[in-house]
Length: 80
Image (tube, rainbow, N blue to C red; front, side, top):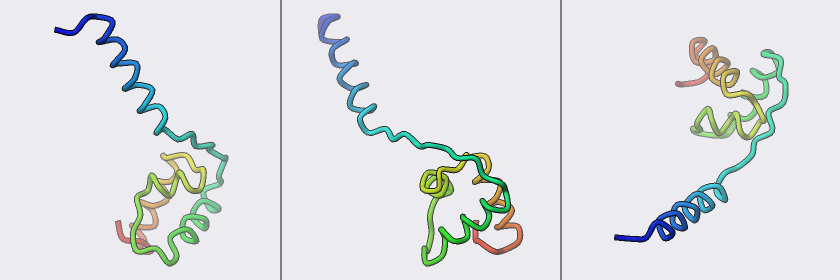
């Protein structure tokens, strides 16, 4: 059995490793119409991408990105 100190050291090392892989995304305010246009521009020439990747690349709130993509899918402008 490991000592308590070893256990804590291991947990802290794991946390620091995971934190080092994290990215900070600066979310900008978007009007829905501008978000639609930006998403369509972003998707041009791309075969497929995740909504989370779109939101991260554009600095867009996840809820807005999912809402706009769902709307575009409903209009058959994108395949969801």
